[in-house]
Length: 270
Image 1: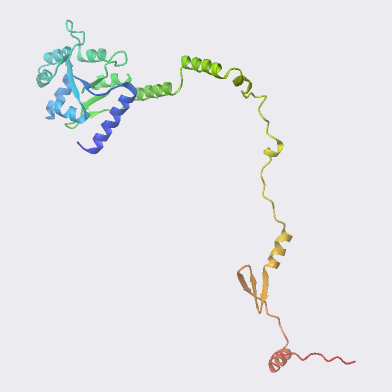
Image 2: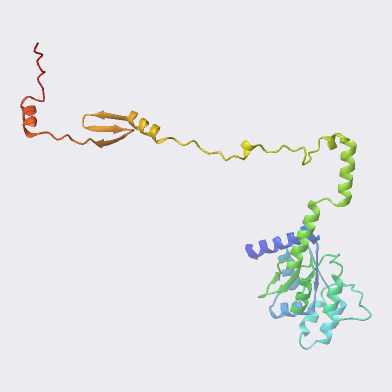
């Protein structure tokens, strides 16, 4: 069996075990339609169903299912020989046999208390059993047994069961209140917070926390402090840009070039 199929069936069985108590040994009720599909697919029912479920399995049938295969011996004659290999489970219809659909439906009445797994190929019966929670269904598909995923009714019932487990019932609530009153006495009532005793939020708490905005003047002053003039370049907070050159007359530039850029100091005539 492939790992994917094995993980899928183990996940489904875990769901029914946790929520509805379906556990080993699995009691599988088999009808004639399932055996006929297994015969046509050359499937060994007991061996492959036990291997698929991955645990101890008891395959059972009822006298009503055997009687139905005997009546329909021509279409599903081979199913009668396969059904006779399994133990017959008491269904209460030994004296007055009914159809396999009515028999299996009565076996899982009142919430499936015996935790049966139904193995059938009848589509109408499977549709009928999907409306009842906690009933695993198995059918034959491509010469192999397959278990249906939990129906919508079973999933909703499982949610209700989980909710009931998490929340205490009325009896548990009353016991908790009585124990609390005995242990704490009146202190729990005095210290209990009421809407009147709760602190009201102050106006300061309701004000939004706004960041301080820096003024433009301060920003410019900071820029001036970070600016340093070196030669013909300006260094500003790690960044450099070229300084604009000053225009000079040609004779002034010639005088500076001949004098190596030195300017004679002005004489002070007294």
